[in-house]
Each structure stands twice: as C-alpha cells, then as structure tokens.
Length: 158
Image (tube, rainbow, N blue to C red; front, side, top):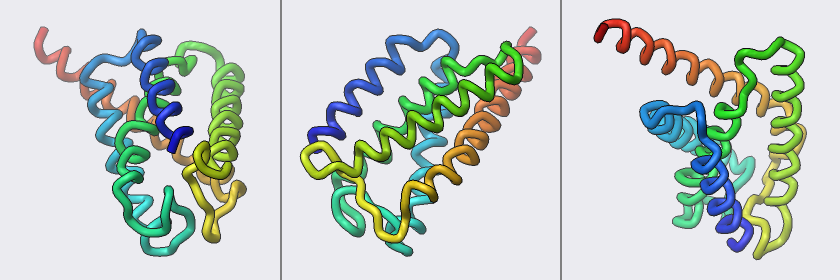
C-alpha cells in the first residue's frame, strides 16, 4: 500500500505541476475515459478471468485507488509531453520510452508489500508488453478526437 500511495502522490503532483498542454476539459475527458476504460477491462481480466489483481483476488475497496487516481495522471503526463509536432522518429522514440517506463513500473508493483500491490494470475509481463502499445494508441486516438471536438466547438462560437 505504501508504494501505491507514494506513486499516487508523485504521479498526480508531476502531472498537474508540469501540465502545459491539456485544458481542464481535456483533463476531465481523459480522467473519465481512463477510469471507464480501465474498469471495463479489469472487470474481465481481473474479476472474471483472474489474470491479475490489485491487493487481493476479486473486488476490494483498495483497488478503487488504482482505478481512480493512479493511471489518469500517468496518461496526462504521456499526452502532455507527447511530441505531436516533432518528426515520426522522435514520436516513436518517445513511445518506446513510455512503454519501457510502464513495464518497469509494473515490475515495481509486483514487489512484496508494502511496496507492491499488483499480482499475476495467468497474466505476465509479456502480456503487458504486447497490450500496452495498443492501449497508448487508443489513448492518443481518444485525445485527438477530443481535440477535434473542442476545435469544432470553438469554430462554431466565432
């Protein structure tokens, strides 16, 4: 639990302190999207198929912290620093850096308590390595869609 609390405080502090790109509207969209997407995914992989779990196998109150205040600020940092206006190679390098960082963090969460809080059933790090790029691409696509909607709304107001 200690590792989770430190990560929540650190990730939220960094995400909000360094944010220069994301508007309040985008942050709310991103936060709610992350909670909904992760919760829906975890209903199947965690609760139904027991692939992994937080703290204890099955639903528990402490897992709510992971779903509500841990992943969203990480997504904020990823999008805030993403080199949208840079060349493709720079974007790919940035993407790979984040994939490695996420896998390293996942390895940290597997440590014994009080630092770790994540446990594998049949899931393993290779599953995450394969799935994380897809999840980050979905996040990028969602962010771009929100930006387009904002642009359309602002264009109508002019």
